[in-house]
Image 1 (tube, one colour):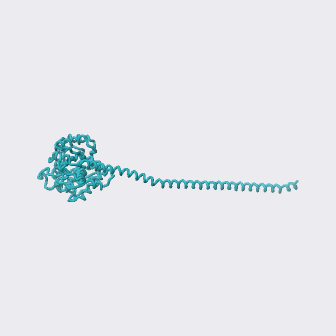
Image 2: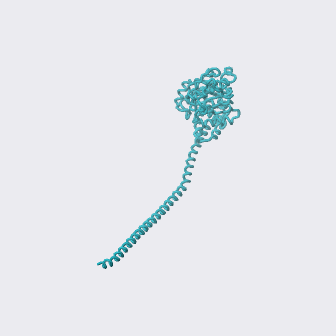
Image 3: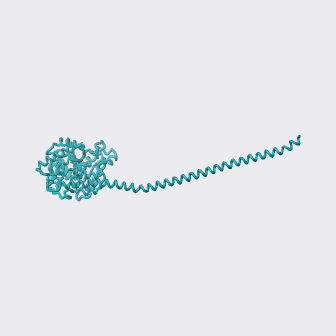
Length: 416
């Protein structure tokens, strides 16, 4: 019994050992097989990634090639648009020049005007433009009649042999109301008021067969410059700036022997605010400590440029009593021409002051609408022999120094 059991023991042990080794071998096989499968999967994934990378590289190379091919086409298209735009601007310039030639050709009278827009555009662009027309088209001034307002015949000397005053035919208040009906600051086309004034001037001056060189031609032409489509050289090519003569609109003994002329009014470039008024008061009082000041306040309400109400007194004098509507711009021109210095809002007669030989301080507090005009005024003052210095003054810089600049008895004055 014991002998049989002891004989079976080694057999059991051997079988168990075999089974154990079989299980181990089976486990190793499963492990190796799993690794083989995972390796195959990794290889497939690597192949897939490489295939995808090759595909993406091909696509990117194709896109790059397409972009490279399209770039010249886009550039050509951009140049085409530039050429089209440039051609349009050239056509505008040529059309205006051709129309001027048709108007002035012959020996008939030529009416320039009527001028209904802002004074600033008249003195900075319109009159220099007419000087260019006179030279470029050999227009004899004896054929020309200028229509404007405020007694500005002296502005048109050398351009027009005769001058027609608008306010000989229409009351200033009626003029202001009818001019407002045009609903534009510039003169883009003749209005009923334009045509009426031309008819009245033609009858008053016995003009037969007269043709009209209207301000709309100048506005069409210089719009190319104001919109940024033409450079400063374009203005140089279509203007001729000259010094202006002072008219004799008021007797000199009604003015101080020496004085500074000042014209400050509210405009888009210098809106009526408390800070602006405080700064103007300071500048005016400081100037009056050095010399008498003549204020060019007209009292006229013919546009939206109302004079600042800077009360006169002491060394600050008002020229209002020296003016009538029909002479107001002539009187202002004479006062500025004989002034020791001039200070005024950027615009209106301020653009003219340097061409009267007077050093000018041009005030503004917002230059959004002034960039082109300031450039023209600075260039003209620097290049025209005998012109006064043109010095733009940004009140924002002065106001920014501090509100303490408002005038007090102990405030320092400007350097003399």
